[in-house]
Image: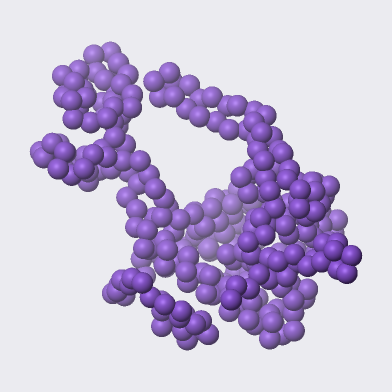
Length: 292
């Protein structure tokens, strides 16, 4: 990864710790290509549900390896076995099922504290959520380097960059056509032509397309749309209080609780952009934040 980055114009400031990974086979290539083909065909056939499922599987696959998951084991056992588990593990729930017990327990004690037996080894091997953080981190790093190459191409083409995310750019013109292909992996596609837009923080924005459609995004509040007035409140540097819906579950009670109308406070976060003021100290624009 370091060689790739240095070859793309990055400058290495310092190294505090390093790991060497041996290159292996491309684990996900065939699956990703198949999902991308499903997405492209579903788009052409006007099947948005299938397209969205394929896209979700593609987008969330690598992130799954970077998740922190609780080492929770669920088993249906006899009452005697449940009592044995309670002596060695932290039990979350235990529900009686007509002579058997549905027990959920956490395997999170130091290794020396585990009961070293076949049941323990079997439980460790069967735990859900096996992760590989270096894999997720490597994919994220490569993605950032790749999108930065598109930024360089945009600047070389005389374009101005207004906003960028992991796999997107908002520009004041189109990239060279050889960089655009909606059906090819690793290429960009033209999503919208924008008439007006405000980008106040990463994943917090409002825009209006030339066709009159309003599109907004607000991190921490999925499924809700910000109005132009709300985004202007953030753009002026003021905080905004929204209402969100959250849910929780109780295995013991066998219920799912949905709580609506919870307050959610969002503040404009300018850790990637720098405010630009005019002669009257009025905030008129932002520009990229460059740290020396």
